[in-house]
Image 1 (cartoon, rainbow, N blue to C red):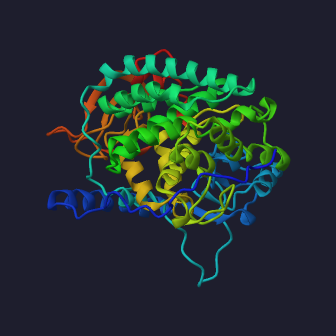
Image 2: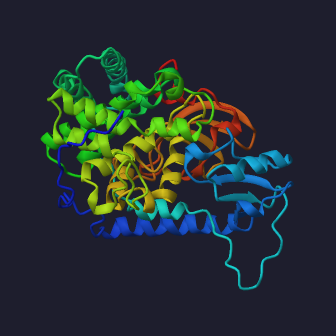
Image 3: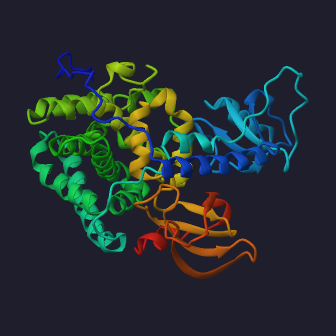
Length: 457
Protein backbone atom coordinates (compact mmCIF):
# COMPACT_ATOMS: atom_id res chain seq x y z
CA UNK A 1 0.00 0.00 0.00
CA UNK A 2 1.15 3.52 -0.73
CA UNK A 3 1.40 6.23 1.85
CA UNK A 4 -1.28 8.89 1.30
CA UNK A 5 -0.03 12.16 -0.09
CA UNK A 6 -2.24 14.36 2.09
CA UNK A 7 -1.56 14.60 5.81
CA UNK A 8 -2.77 16.82 8.58
CA UNK A 9 -0.04 19.37 9.29
CA UNK A 10 1.31 19.82 12.77
CA UNK A 11 3.27 22.72 14.21
CA UNK A 12 6.48 21.06 15.42
CA UNK A 13 7.98 23.94 17.38
CA UNK A 14 5.53 24.17 20.25
CA UNK A 15 7.00 26.08 23.23
CA UNK A 16 8.14 23.91 26.10
CA UNK A 17 5.21 23.70 28.56
CA UNK A 18 7.36 23.41 31.66
CA UNK A 19 10.91 24.13 32.69
CA UNK A 20 12.12 20.77 33.93
CA UNK A 21 15.16 20.82 36.16
CA UNK A 22 14.46 24.06 38.04
CA UNK A 23 16.90 24.90 40.86
CA UNK A 24 16.44 22.55 43.79
CA UNK A 25 16.13 23.49 47.42
CA UNK A 26 19.09 22.94 49.76
CA UNK A 27 17.74 19.65 51.26
CA UNK A 28 17.00 18.31 47.79
CA UNK A 29 20.46 19.36 46.59
CA UNK A 30 22.03 17.56 49.57
CA UNK A 31 19.98 14.43 48.85
CA UNK A 32 21.00 14.55 45.18
CA UNK A 33 24.70 14.97 45.94
CA UNK A 34 24.64 12.24 48.59
CA UNK A 35 22.89 9.82 46.27
CA UNK A 36 25.23 10.52 43.39
CA UNK A 37 28.29 10.22 45.65
CA UNK A 38 27.10 6.80 46.89
CA UNK A 39 26.46 5.53 43.38
CA UNK A 40 29.77 6.86 42.09
CA UNK A 41 31.51 4.91 44.85
CA UNK A 42 29.74 1.74 43.74
CA UNK A 43 30.65 2.49 40.12
CA UNK A 44 34.35 2.83 40.93
CA UNK A 45 34.30 -0.52 42.71
CA UNK A 46 32.59 -2.42 39.90
CA UNK A 47 34.76 -0.71 37.27
CA UNK A 48 37.53 -3.06 38.37
CA UNK A 49 35.34 -6.03 37.38
CA UNK A 50 33.26 -4.73 34.47
CA UNK A 51 34.58 -3.50 31.15
CA UNK A 52 32.77 -2.23 28.09
CA UNK A 53 34.41 -3.57 24.93
CA UNK A 54 33.71 -3.67 21.21
CA UNK A 55 32.11 -6.89 19.99
CA UNK A 56 35.12 -7.36 17.73
CA UNK A 57 37.19 -8.05 20.89
CA UNK A 58 34.95 -10.87 22.13
CA UNK A 59 36.48 -14.32 22.48
CA UNK A 60 35.52 -17.63 24.12
CA UNK A 61 36.14 -17.62 27.86
CA UNK A 62 34.84 -14.10 28.44
CA UNK A 63 31.88 -13.72 30.81
CA UNK A 64 29.15 -11.68 29.12
CA UNK A 65 27.59 -9.35 31.67
CA UNK A 66 25.43 -7.15 29.46
CA UNK A 67 24.66 -6.39 25.83
CA UNK A 68 24.57 -2.69 24.93
CA UNK A 69 21.97 -1.56 22.46
CA UNK A 70 18.27 -1.62 21.60
CA UNK A 71 16.30 -4.44 23.18
CA UNK A 72 14.97 -5.74 19.87
CA UNK A 73 18.52 -6.27 18.62
CA UNK A 74 19.48 -8.64 21.44
CA UNK A 75 20.04 -12.19 20.14
CA UNK A 76 19.73 -13.91 23.55
CA UNK A 77 17.07 -14.35 26.24
CA UNK A 78 19.66 -13.68 28.94
CA UNK A 79 22.66 -11.41 29.30
CA UNK A 80 24.82 -13.09 31.95
CA UNK A 81 26.79 -16.16 30.83
CA UNK A 82 30.30 -17.25 29.89
CA UNK A 83 30.96 -17.43 26.16
CA UNK A 84 32.05 -20.94 25.21
CA UNK A 85 30.47 -21.43 21.78
CA UNK A 86 31.93 -19.44 18.85
CA UNK A 87 28.44 -19.52 17.32
CA UNK A 88 27.18 -17.30 20.18
CA UNK A 89 29.87 -14.76 19.41
CA UNK A 90 28.87 -14.86 15.75
CA UNK A 91 25.23 -14.24 16.71
CA UNK A 92 26.33 -11.08 18.51
CA UNK A 93 28.35 -9.98 15.47
CA UNK A 94 25.31 -10.59 13.26
CA UNK A 95 23.06 -8.45 15.48
CA UNK A 96 23.07 -4.67 15.73
CA UNK A 97 24.98 -4.79 19.02
CA UNK A 98 28.27 -2.89 18.84
CA UNK A 99 29.47 -3.04 22.45
CA UNK A 100 29.11 -5.36 25.43
CA UNK A 101 30.03 -5.41 29.12
CA UNK A 102 32.25 -8.28 30.29
CA UNK A 103 32.91 -9.31 33.91
CA UNK A 104 36.62 -10.07 34.25
CA UNK A 105 36.10 -11.49 37.74
CA UNK A 106 34.15 -14.37 36.16
CA UNK A 107 35.91 -14.80 32.83
CA UNK A 108 38.82 -13.79 30.62
CA UNK A 109 39.95 -10.20 30.22
CA UNK A 110 40.81 -8.40 27.01
CA UNK A 111 44.43 -8.12 25.96
CA UNK A 112 46.31 -5.26 27.69
CA UNK A 113 45.44 -2.00 26.00
CA UNK A 114 47.98 0.57 24.80
CA UNK A 115 48.87 3.18 27.40
CA UNK A 116 47.00 5.91 25.54
CA UNK A 117 43.75 3.91 25.36
CA UNK A 118 40.77 5.19 27.28
CA UNK A 119 39.97 3.67 30.67
CA UNK A 120 37.00 1.28 30.77
CA UNK A 121 33.75 2.99 31.71
CA UNK A 122 31.94 2.42 34.97
CA UNK A 123 28.27 1.52 34.84
CA UNK A 124 26.38 4.76 34.26
CA UNK A 125 23.71 4.56 36.95
CA UNK A 126 24.65 8.13 37.86
CA UNK A 127 23.32 9.32 34.51
CA UNK A 128 19.86 8.15 35.46
CA UNK A 129 19.92 10.05 38.73
CA UNK A 130 21.31 13.24 37.26
CA UNK A 131 18.87 13.13 34.33
CA UNK A 132 15.92 12.67 36.64
CA UNK A 133 16.90 15.45 39.07
CA UNK A 134 16.93 13.42 42.28
CA UNK A 135 14.54 14.54 44.95
CA UNK A 136 11.81 15.71 42.58
CA UNK A 137 8.96 13.53 43.78
CA UNK A 138 6.21 12.08 41.57
CA UNK A 139 2.83 13.78 41.39
CA UNK A 140 0.87 13.40 44.60
CA UNK A 141 -1.39 10.36 44.62
CA UNK A 142 -4.92 10.49 46.04
CA UNK A 143 -5.65 6.86 46.87
CA UNK A 144 -3.36 4.02 47.97
CA UNK A 145 -2.06 1.56 45.41
CA UNK A 146 -3.87 -1.40 46.99
CA UNK A 147 -7.18 0.44 46.74
CA UNK A 148 -6.80 1.39 43.06
CA UNK A 149 -5.45 -1.92 41.77
CA UNK A 150 -8.82 -3.71 41.63
CA UNK A 151 -10.48 -0.81 39.80
CA UNK A 152 -7.53 -0.54 37.42
CA UNK A 153 -7.73 -4.27 36.67
CA UNK A 154 -11.38 -3.91 35.66
CA UNK A 155 -10.53 -0.93 33.42
CA UNK A 156 -7.70 -2.90 31.79
CA UNK A 157 -10.06 -5.79 31.01
CA UNK A 158 -12.64 -3.40 29.55
CA UNK A 159 -9.99 -1.56 27.53
CA UNK A 160 -8.54 -4.78 26.13
CA UNK A 161 -11.97 -5.83 24.82
CA UNK A 162 -12.52 -2.40 23.26
CA UNK A 163 -9.17 -2.37 21.44
CA UNK A 164 -9.59 -5.98 20.25
CA UNK A 165 -13.00 -5.04 18.85
CA UNK A 166 -11.61 -1.92 17.16
CA UNK A 167 -8.78 -3.86 15.49
CA UNK A 168 -11.20 -6.59 14.37
CA UNK A 169 -13.46 -4.02 12.72
CA UNK A 170 -10.49 -2.45 10.93
CA UNK A 171 -9.50 -5.87 9.56
CA UNK A 172 -13.08 -6.28 8.32
CA UNK A 173 -12.81 -3.00 6.42
CA UNK A 174 -15.00 -0.93 8.71
CA UNK A 175 -14.24 2.74 9.38
CA UNK A 176 -12.71 3.78 12.71
CA UNK A 177 -14.73 6.01 15.01
CA UNK A 178 -12.26 7.58 17.43
CA UNK A 179 -15.03 9.37 19.32
CA UNK A 180 -16.34 6.02 20.57
CA UNK A 181 -13.23 5.42 22.69
CA UNK A 182 -13.32 8.82 24.37
CA UNK A 183 -15.17 7.51 27.42
CA UNK A 184 -12.62 4.70 27.82
CA UNK A 185 -9.76 7.21 27.74
CA UNK A 186 -11.57 9.22 30.43
CA UNK A 187 -11.79 6.07 32.63
CA UNK A 188 -8.07 5.43 32.15
CA UNK A 189 -7.29 9.08 32.89
CA UNK A 190 -9.33 9.04 36.10
CA UNK A 191 -7.51 5.92 37.31
CA UNK A 192 -4.12 7.47 36.53
CA UNK A 193 -5.15 10.58 38.47
CA UNK A 194 -6.21 8.51 41.50
CA UNK A 195 -2.92 6.56 41.49
CA UNK A 196 -0.66 6.53 38.40
CA UNK A 197 1.18 3.35 39.34
CA UNK A 198 -1.80 1.00 39.45
CA UNK A 199 -3.11 0.94 35.88
CA UNK A 200 0.27 1.68 34.28
CA UNK A 201 1.87 -1.27 36.05
CA UNK A 202 -1.06 -3.64 35.48
CA UNK A 203 -1.12 -2.83 31.76
CA UNK A 204 2.50 -3.98 31.59
CA UNK A 205 1.44 -7.51 32.65
CA UNK A 206 0.16 -8.41 29.22
CA UNK A 207 0.41 -11.86 27.68
CA UNK A 208 2.36 -12.31 24.45
CA UNK A 209 -0.83 -13.09 22.50
CA UNK A 210 -2.59 -9.86 23.49
CA UNK A 211 0.48 -7.63 23.40
CA UNK A 212 -0.67 -5.45 20.50
CA UNK A 213 -3.98 -4.60 22.18
CA UNK A 214 -2.78 -4.03 25.74
CA UNK A 215 0.24 -2.14 24.43
CA UNK A 216 -2.19 0.50 23.16
CA UNK A 217 -3.83 0.68 26.60
CA UNK A 218 -0.47 0.93 28.37
CA UNK A 219 0.80 3.70 26.09
CA UNK A 220 -2.47 5.58 26.63
CA UNK A 221 -1.95 5.51 30.41
CA UNK A 222 1.75 6.39 30.15
CA UNK A 223 0.96 9.34 27.86
CA UNK A 224 -1.64 10.66 30.30
CA UNK A 225 0.77 10.45 33.24
CA UNK A 226 3.61 12.03 31.25
CA UNK A 227 1.35 14.84 30.01
CA UNK A 228 0.47 15.73 33.60
CA UNK A 229 4.17 15.77 34.55
CA UNK A 230 4.72 18.20 31.68
CA UNK A 231 1.97 20.42 33.15
CA UNK A 232 -0.23 20.21 30.06
CA UNK A 233 -3.83 21.31 30.54
CA UNK A 234 -6.59 18.71 30.88
CA UNK A 235 -7.69 19.05 27.25
CA UNK A 236 -4.12 18.30 26.14
CA UNK A 237 -3.86 15.45 28.62
CA UNK A 238 -6.95 13.89 27.06
CA UNK A 239 -5.51 14.42 23.56
CA UNK A 240 -2.31 12.67 24.65
CA UNK A 241 -4.33 9.73 26.00
CA UNK A 242 -6.39 9.42 22.83
CA UNK A 243 -3.23 9.54 20.73
CA UNK A 244 -1.62 6.85 22.89
CA UNK A 245 -4.62 4.54 22.54
CA UNK A 246 -4.69 4.90 18.74
CA UNK A 247 -0.96 5.14 18.00
CA UNK A 248 -0.57 1.54 16.76
CA UNK A 249 -3.85 1.28 14.87
CA UNK A 250 -1.95 0.51 11.66
CA UNK A 251 -0.86 -2.84 13.09
CA UNK A 252 -4.41 -4.04 12.47
CA UNK A 253 -3.41 -4.24 8.79
CA UNK A 254 -0.10 -6.05 9.36
CA UNK A 255 -0.28 -9.82 8.62
CA UNK A 256 -0.57 -11.70 11.92
CA UNK A 257 2.17 -14.16 10.98
CA UNK A 258 4.57 -11.23 10.76
CA UNK A 259 3.17 -9.28 13.70
CA UNK A 260 3.34 -12.29 16.06
CA UNK A 261 6.38 -14.06 14.61
CA UNK A 262 8.20 -15.84 17.46
CA UNK A 263 11.64 -15.51 15.85
CA UNK A 264 13.78 -12.69 14.51
CA UNK A 265 12.22 -10.73 11.65
CA UNK A 266 13.85 -10.73 8.25
CA UNK A 267 14.65 -7.36 6.67
CA UNK A 268 11.62 -7.78 4.40
CA UNK A 269 9.34 -8.55 7.35
CA UNK A 270 10.68 -5.58 9.29
CA UNK A 271 9.91 -3.36 6.30
CA UNK A 272 6.32 -4.66 6.50
CA UNK A 273 6.17 -3.80 10.21
CA UNK A 274 7.52 -0.32 9.48
CA UNK A 275 4.44 0.38 7.35
CA UNK A 276 2.16 0.52 10.39
CA UNK A 277 2.58 4.26 11.20
CA UNK A 278 1.56 5.28 7.66
CA UNK A 279 -1.25 2.71 7.56
CA UNK A 280 -2.60 3.90 10.89
CA UNK A 281 -2.36 7.52 9.79
CA UNK A 282 -4.35 6.69 6.65
CA UNK A 283 -7.06 4.89 8.66
CA UNK A 284 -7.39 7.79 11.08
CA UNK A 285 -7.43 10.35 8.28
CA UNK A 286 -10.18 8.43 6.48
CA UNK A 287 -12.25 8.24 9.68
CA UNK A 288 -12.74 12.00 9.70
CA UNK A 289 -12.90 11.94 13.52
CA UNK A 290 -9.21 11.99 14.46
CA UNK A 291 -7.55 15.12 15.82
CA UNK A 292 -4.29 16.53 14.48
CA UNK A 293 -2.49 15.26 17.60
CA UNK A 294 -3.76 11.70 17.09
CA UNK A 295 -2.72 11.76 13.43
CA UNK A 296 0.72 13.11 14.27
CA UNK A 297 1.52 10.64 17.09
CA UNK A 298 0.28 7.72 15.00
CA UNK A 299 2.55 8.69 12.12
CA UNK A 300 5.63 9.86 14.03
CA UNK A 301 5.98 7.84 17.27
CA UNK A 302 8.96 5.98 15.77
CA UNK A 303 10.91 9.11 14.89
CA UNK A 304 14.15 9.75 16.83
CA UNK A 305 15.68 13.10 17.71
CA UNK A 306 18.89 12.19 15.83
CA UNK A 307 16.92 11.83 12.60
CA UNK A 308 17.35 8.05 12.19
CA UNK A 309 13.74 7.07 12.91
CA UNK A 310 10.89 6.34 10.53
CA UNK A 311 8.87 6.93 8.40
CA UNK A 312 10.06 10.49 7.68
CA UNK A 313 13.46 10.64 9.42
CA UNK A 314 12.43 13.80 11.29
CA UNK A 315 14.98 15.31 13.67
CA UNK A 316 14.56 17.08 17.01
CA UNK A 317 12.65 20.35 16.39
CA UNK A 318 10.83 18.78 13.44
CA UNK A 319 9.15 16.33 15.83
CA UNK A 320 6.17 17.61 17.81
CA UNK A 321 6.00 17.46 21.61
CA UNK A 322 3.26 14.83 21.49
CA UNK A 323 5.19 12.62 19.05
CA UNK A 324 8.27 12.87 21.30
CA UNK A 325 6.09 11.78 24.22
CA UNK A 326 4.73 8.88 22.18
CA UNK A 327 8.24 7.71 21.33
CA UNK A 328 9.28 7.41 24.99
CA UNK A 329 6.05 5.75 26.15
CA UNK A 330 6.03 3.30 23.23
CA UNK A 331 9.61 2.13 23.86
CA UNK A 332 9.18 1.74 27.63
CA UNK A 333 6.12 -0.47 27.35
CA UNK A 334 7.66 -2.48 24.50
CA UNK A 335 10.85 -3.37 26.35
CA UNK A 336 9.12 -4.19 29.66
CA UNK A 337 6.57 -6.52 28.03
CA UNK A 338 6.91 -10.21 27.20
CA UNK A 339 6.77 -10.76 23.44
CA UNK A 340 6.54 -13.95 21.36
CA UNK A 341 10.27 -13.66 20.65
CA UNK A 342 11.68 -11.94 23.75
CA UNK A 343 11.13 -11.81 27.50
CA UNK A 344 10.55 -8.28 28.81
CA UNK A 345 13.16 -6.49 30.89
CA UNK A 346 12.74 -5.58 34.54
CA UNK A 347 11.27 -2.02 34.83
CA UNK A 348 14.33 -0.56 36.58
CA UNK A 349 16.67 -2.17 34.04
CA UNK A 350 14.51 -0.71 31.26
CA UNK A 351 14.84 2.82 32.67
CA UNK A 352 18.62 2.41 32.87
CA UNK A 353 18.79 1.11 29.30
CA UNK A 354 16.63 3.95 27.99
CA UNK A 355 18.94 6.42 29.71
CA UNK A 356 21.85 4.96 27.73
CA UNK A 357 19.97 5.46 24.46
CA UNK A 358 18.24 8.71 25.37
CA UNK A 359 20.49 11.27 23.70
CA UNK A 360 19.93 9.86 20.23
CA UNK A 361 16.42 8.48 20.69
CA UNK A 362 14.48 10.88 22.90
CA UNK A 363 14.00 14.54 23.67
CA UNK A 364 15.89 15.02 26.94
CA UNK A 365 13.32 17.17 28.75
CA UNK A 366 10.51 14.81 27.79
CA UNK A 367 12.58 11.83 28.92
CA UNK A 368 13.41 13.45 32.27
CA UNK A 369 9.72 14.12 32.86
CA UNK A 370 8.99 10.50 31.95
CA UNK A 371 11.44 9.24 34.59
CA UNK A 372 9.73 11.45 37.15
CA UNK A 373 6.36 9.97 36.16
CA UNK A 374 7.41 6.31 36.20
CA UNK A 375 10.21 6.38 38.79
CA UNK A 376 13.86 5.35 38.74
CA UNK A 377 12.70 2.10 40.32
CA UNK A 378 9.23 1.62 38.79
CA UNK A 379 6.62 -0.59 40.44
CA UNK A 380 7.54 -4.25 39.98
CA UNK A 381 11.31 -3.64 40.02
CA UNK A 382 13.45 -6.14 41.95
CA UNK A 383 15.92 -4.23 44.14
CA UNK A 384 18.69 -5.03 46.60
CA UNK A 385 18.66 -3.16 49.91
CA UNK A 386 21.64 -2.06 51.97
CA UNK A 387 20.92 -4.91 54.42
CA UNK A 388 21.48 -7.46 51.65
CA UNK A 389 17.79 -8.32 51.44
CA UNK A 390 15.85 -8.33 48.17
CA UNK A 391 12.54 -6.55 47.70
CA UNK A 392 10.02 -5.71 45.00
CA UNK A 393 8.86 -2.10 44.56
CA UNK A 394 5.14 -1.88 45.36
CA UNK A 395 4.48 1.86 45.21
CA UNK A 396 6.27 5.09 44.36
CA UNK A 397 6.99 7.64 47.06
CA UNK A 398 5.64 11.17 47.12
CA UNK A 399 8.91 12.30 48.74
CA UNK A 400 11.76 10.81 46.73
CA UNK A 401 12.37 8.84 43.56
CA UNK A 402 15.07 6.93 45.45
CA UNK A 403 12.86 5.78 48.32
CA UNK A 404 9.70 3.93 47.17
CA UNK A 405 7.63 1.52 49.24
CA UNK A 406 9.00 -2.01 48.88
CA UNK A 407 8.04 -5.53 49.92
CA UNK A 408 11.05 -7.34 51.35
CA UNK A 409 10.91 -11.12 50.89
CA UNK A 410 14.40 -12.66 50.43
CA UNK A 411 17.69 -12.76 52.33
CA UNK A 412 20.82 -12.99 50.19
CA UNK A 413 22.85 -13.89 53.28
CA UNK A 414 20.87 -17.05 54.05
CA UNK A 415 19.73 -17.51 50.42
CA UNK A 416 16.17 -18.13 51.61
CA UNK A 417 12.76 -16.53 51.48
CA UNK A 418 11.78 -14.60 54.57
CA UNK A 419 8.45 -13.38 55.93
CA UNK A 420 7.32 -10.59 53.56
CA UNK A 421 7.49 -7.13 55.06
CA UNK A 422 6.41 -3.84 53.48
CA UNK A 423 8.73 -0.90 54.17
CA UNK A 424 8.33 2.75 53.23
CA UNK A 425 11.95 3.71 52.55
CA UNK A 426 11.04 7.40 52.77
CA UNK A 427 9.68 7.15 56.33
CA UNK A 428 11.65 8.86 59.11
CA UNK A 429 13.92 6.50 60.96
CA UNK A 430 14.17 3.93 58.17
CA UNK A 431 17.86 3.25 57.56
CA UNK A 432 17.40 0.79 54.65
CA UNK A 433 18.32 2.13 51.21
CA UNK A 434 18.24 0.74 47.70
CA UNK A 435 21.76 -0.02 46.51
CA UNK A 436 20.80 -1.27 43.06
CA UNK A 437 18.38 -3.28 40.98
CA UNK A 438 18.60 -7.03 40.44
CA UNK A 439 17.81 -9.29 37.50
CA UNK A 440 14.79 -11.47 38.42
CA UNK A 441 15.94 -14.09 35.92
CA UNK A 442 19.20 -14.53 37.82
CA UNK A 443 17.26 -15.43 40.97
CA UNK A 444 14.52 -17.45 39.32
CA UNK A 445 11.67 -15.50 40.92
CA UNK A 446 8.39 -15.99 39.07
CA UNK A 447 5.93 -14.39 41.49
CA UNK A 448 7.13 -10.78 41.65
CA UNK A 449 4.12 -9.39 39.76
CA UNK A 450 1.67 -11.18 42.05
CA UNK A 451 3.64 -9.89 45.01
CA UNK A 452 3.18 -6.21 44.21
CA UNK A 453 -0.21 -6.36 42.48
CA UNK A 454 -2.09 -8.86 44.62
CA UNK A 455 -3.45 -10.24 41.34
CA UNK A 456 -3.12 -13.79 40.02
CA UNK A 457 -0.85 -13.26 37.00
